[in-house]
Image 1 (cartoon, rainbow, N blue to C red):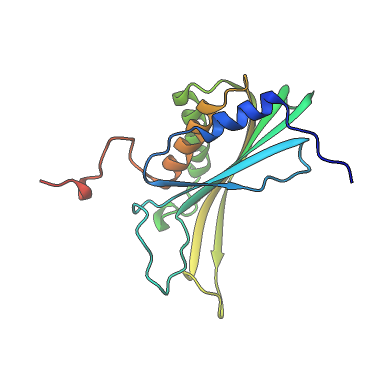
Image 2: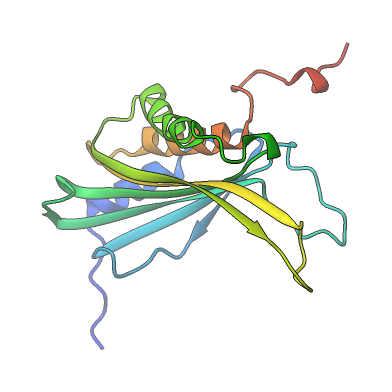
Length: 196
């Protein structure tokens, strides 16, 4: 079996720029195995947030974040026409929805704005942005552990970054996860956490 080709320098630089993102303390990051068949070179990471400040769960609780996401970097040195470039970023974010938000027709529009505003606020230049926002409801029955009902909003999107320095795109993705989790802007403390 032949060895896999060495990743090209521009892919290595792109991965290094994604790895260099500085996270706010409420977010936890981990690298993932990226799906290998989507492009000749891939890399991915996951981000988890807890709207309650990453409070430790009780021993008998399942540690499941309120909000999580993953960002996948695809690179095809030959380029792909649909991408309009040689790199493509693909993201998936899932966030728990409050009961009063169930069935809100505006929720998909708000969910999409989390992404576009995060990209714009970070100054992340892109082309060919597209995606979906979906509301889901799951009700557990029988011996399945966890809360009886989960209502979530799921955002799936992809875009082509301009250039190979993807640090602003990583920052935007982390901002998207923070917004979806309902975290306050960086440097702002919720009233309940302020001390007198």
